[in-house]
Length: 611
Image (cartoon, rainbow, N blue to C red):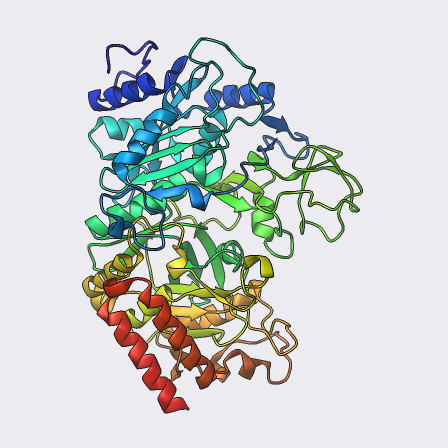
């Protein structure tokens, strides 16, 4: 610890010297009034919540209706991830690649030193030891987040395994990732003048920075979500993807499911879906086909490592769900809705007159009066939404009725199937199986959704989101594809089977052809039966398709010809798509793996044969 630190370090006895030195250095820079080490004990949570209620950061909800639940309202300028202010500070710009914002690491360190200088004056610096994944697991990793936000502490206690048990592992010599966060709103200036606390402190200038070589995360200016809960996207994906590349595993933006057949066989599935494609609904799927059971292991992120038997094993590195609230309802995702009955932090949703919460899509009819996410009166005649479109709930994963009994198994679960999905009105069939691991990587690399509104770009234009990792890959995306191909070589014939799904195909009138939601279990059942060797498939341009009679459609009423439309393949449209893919690959120059160029050539060959 630096000698000129003016504040007591208050370190636990088992904190290693290297950790204490680092905390002291950050304290020297940020100049907090005091330092507090998070323990994870129940009384600590009660103190934090009481403190935030006093400052107005949290509003207690009706404790009869939602015990242990609170509402937070962020500043209107701090409501989402800020991709334009998110940087990969690799030593070489080419290592960040064309899909990331690169910043020179030395220049960024100078900028951050200026921003963090005195950033915590008048505040408490919280030191949060945490584990990503079950404590002590061979796929899990440790971290320390330093923050001046009690809201972040409370959220990290839900989203990670935070506190003394994680510190004990660090004290025993386990590797950990350093992460520093400040809201950028000191309460005291350099001259000692003090200003009042506000309900949601933040700064208009924001930096969310990652240093791949040193595995550091520094975040300034925002108190919201993934900008501030640094275990989430910053660690679990951007830094972890680099760790995974260097150590021979995979850190992915994927949900994890356990699916049990009527015969009692357990399958495990991971799935990557871009935003607005039903990922959370799938993570808590309620199947409409009898005899099948679906359990949640993770809703957002999967870390996967080859096991001793050569198979790929997955864990959910998170301990909670940080879900988008609008659209969550009894129809779309009853499991998620039921998990929110107690001990939940809601952010930027609306407040009802009886002290409960509401958001658009929660009920068919909105309440006659609400207090909206900005704290203003709201009625159904209001021109603005009652809840912010990116409003969130933060809740322990164990509260979901669908949670699997093996979700915290430190060894993980063996992965049988990997799904990729996008939002496509045309071209992509309901489900198809990749011809090989290399073809599956090609499918993941070219995942896309069609723009649906002018505000997003040209309507119908494809928005690429490779592996649903576009904002989250911590290094060059083309190198990331190469890493996936290398993992396939290592796994060999024990690699999971890869499928592509599309719930969003439309007819000529713009209506969805497939009912979605619980009925998505039907094409997934076919994929699992393929893995079990129970059904055949037919070759097509996109991959292997089901024989239509093998799909379980019992109890499902589809219009005449709808099933055929869901699997229709237009060679001309696929030829155009192949040209778009070729243009897309040019963005990455000569870094595109040769195997993916070969896959594009093979698709064109299948197009020629089908024309």
